[in-house]
Image (tube, rainbow, N blue to C red; front, side):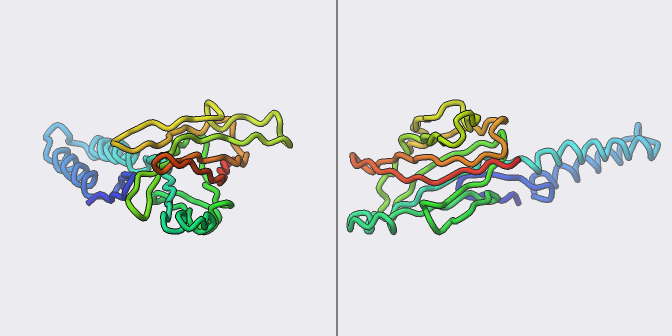
Length: 195
């Protein structure tokens, strides 16, 4: 059957749902008396496969989960309190270092930031802010705005943003502003956009 992870559904051509439809279409095509020539049959099979294979390459959003260890946070050990995990298929650099953690994306990709805590306390992603690079004052924006506020969805506050096409080849430092209850925190990882 199709594979699911916590955040993203990425179908594959051989996954059960699509494969079953392809088999049904092929059986219907073969049994159809109108399709007498092999050429017509071949064209219809190729068209059917192309239709379903387009869905097989659909990339869901890159989901970045900010994991907060509330015990370490309560002990004021911020270096050990934060870590990141990402959705399947998302490439990163320095996953074990929250300050150097960098997600690798392409232009027009969607990114979603969510929070999770070891104690089960709600982690609200309040805002993502892109840090200006003084060495590249004319650098294209990666998102529509430099600050993107979080919105509540399914009881969790998270941020979603789409990578702009003109940001190709740039690396951006950004700040994740988040809160647990009334306590605000920040961490500043990076995003690298492929060429």
